[in-house]
Image (cartoon, rainbow, N blue to C red; front, side):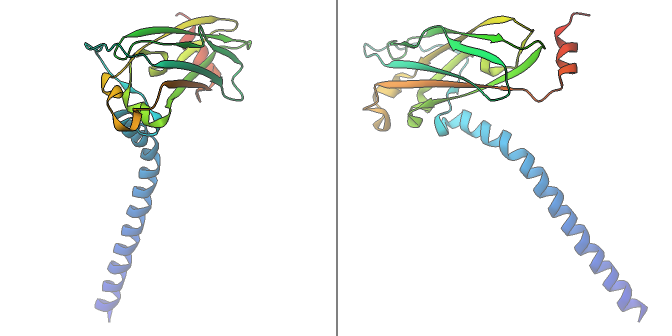
Length: 193
């Protein structure tokens, strides 16, 4: 009889262990989902995510495309954020640098992070960023204004792709969010030792 009860206890223990493993695994997957989705979007251009590249285009076409800029600040972030110019019309494949300005209107140092996308969404796979303030976090001291460059080009394949053939205007949109680190940590990073 003790053999049967020992066997049941081992089976129950194995079931409890499997359930706990499943719960821990699902929790880990839920935390990994956002970063994995972001990486997927950056690699594929899915959902209007621009591509991050290390080199400039070596092919420049005679055809131009208008690129407009949209700058937003999420609720709760007391910053002013604007593009230096509303639009540019580079040749496809031409590397362009544009500037954005951010100003901390609060009385505290604040850490922000910009997210971005390109519309129409099917154009994201052809929008290549070489340099962007959105690749890193930005810390602004009280009243500080920062000039931030974006260096990009539209891939020459954009002109021949079926899904982008009729697109003449792209919009690069940014939204700055306050980073989640406590203000004390921002002060420690911002102040020299």
